[in-house]
Image (cartoon, rainbow over all chains, first blue to last red; front, side, top):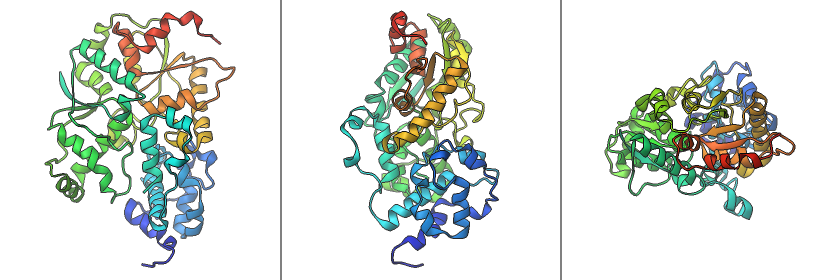
Length: 132
Length: 275
C-alpha cells in the first residue's frame, strides 16, 4: 500500500469498499445507454469501468462523473454482468473524499433561496453524498 | 390493521401534506398508523460503501424501535433506506453485530418494512379501496411517477416489477381516475442534483414532464418529496401544457372525500389555464 497523495490508492480502495470488480465488465454499454444524466458526464459509466480496468487513476480522480451520478441505480439494474455501478461511483466519491480530505460541497455554497425552498431530504442526501 | 409509522424529516416540513392526507385517509379506511416515539432521520441515502456503518445507525435504530411489528413509511427515500438497512442486517452478520452492539439494541432483521402503497395493495387490497371511495376522480387523467427509490434495486426492494410497475396505476384506477402511462415514469428526476447541478436536474425533469404531456396526463403523482420538488421547480414549462404534481396520498384523500390540495385545486379548476 502506498501513501503520499493518496490518489494512487483510489482504485484499490474503491474495489475493497464497494465489493465490485470492474474486470467483469465487457463494455456492452447498457449502463451508459440507461444513465439519465449520461449527457452531462465527461466519462460515461462504461468508460469509468474501462478506466478502472486500465488503472487510469488520475483521470478518474479528475472526472466529473462520480459527482454528477445521482445514484438512481438504473445502471446496476441493466448490467448483464451484475456489476453494481452505483456502488462503484460511491466508491470513487468516498475514496476521493477520504484520501484527499475536504468536502466537495458545503452549506456555505447554498443560496438563501435554496435554503428556503429545498426539501429537507434534498439537503440531507446532498450533504451525505458530497461530504465526509 | 395496525402499523408502526416512521414519518421522516421531510414529512414534518416541506412534505407535511403527504403526512396529513395519508393519516386522514388511513383513519377513514380503518388503518391505524402509530408514530414511533423519538424517531430520528433515516439518513436520506443508503450507504453504498460497505464500511460506512455509521450511516446505518439511524435506520437500524428505527427498525429496532418497531419491535418486530410492521413498520410503514410514506417517503420513498425513507422506505428505501429502511428496507435496504433491514436487508443488510439480515445478510451481513459482521455489520449487524457492529451496528447493534454500538446502538445497544437487539435486531436481526425481523419485521415487515412497508411503504404505505404496499399496505393498500397487499393488506387492504385495491378492490376494497375502490369500495371505500366516496368521490371517484372521474375524468381526471392521472399518470404515476415512480422514480428510482421504490423500485431499485429490485432484488432488495421487492416493491413491484422494476421495469413495468403497476401499483400506483392500480391505485389510480381504484380511485376512479383515468390511468395515463408515460414511458419515463421509472426514470430518475435528478434527485439531489437540484442542490449541486441544477441544469442536469432540469434536463431529467423536462424529459419526464414532456413524456407525461405527450401521453396526455393532467396530473402526476409521486411518493417522493424530492421528486415532487424537482418536478415542480427544476424545469422551464413556459408555453407548455400545465401538469399538476401531487403526492399519491393527496388524490387518495380527495377520492375519500377528505381535504387535500388536489381537492382544493379542483374547486378552482376553471381558473387554471389549459394549454
